[in-house]
Amino acid sequence: MNEKDLALHYVCTREQAKEMVKNLTRFWISNCGCRESHGKCSRSRMDLCLSFRDDIGTSGSGKKEISLDEVNDIFKETEDKHLVTRPFRNEKNMAEAAGICFCCDDCCGYFLNPEERCDKGDFIEKTDMDLCNNCGECEQVCYFKARKMDSDELFVDRSNCYGCGLCLDICPLDCIEMVKRN
Image 1 (spheres, helix red, strand yellow):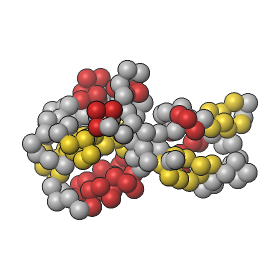
Image 2 (cartoon, helix red, strand yellow; image 1 turned 120 degrees about the vertical axis):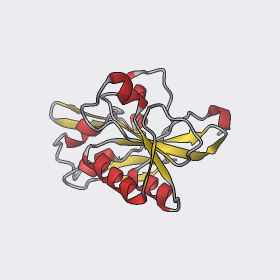
Image 3 (cartoon, helix red, strand yellow; image 1 turned 90 degrees about the horizontal axis):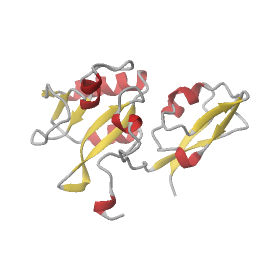
């Protein structure tokens, strides 16, 4: 894909994001611009815009340096709060991630504004429908609307799956896995 065709943000699994930060030594956190513009978020705290470099601007205020332990605490919190891991690209080198936004459907501009672009991740869900008991837990965290309950039956529209892995996190039967996207 040509760099000019890439969106600023893309989706990845939390495990991919952890790999991204593993070899980095410095991190900055700031308030999320979406959360600030909405005044709050019903799912999470305000300061969840993670940057990998000090020389880039952020969409929100309050930028400060944090430790790797604090980054790991953020990963744990975003897992508990069911937030989508959306890295943002370095605008000078789109092949490089400059940081990560942690998003949801409550305040994130991407979910609220259909005009905002976001690229799908490297992975896609694969559900073993023979093991699925149609509990609907996964539908609650699928902000991309790939998972829908209808008449007590789960339907998956894989064309809507961005590969965040939140469905995998919440499935009580472990009948979902993330597989490489073709």
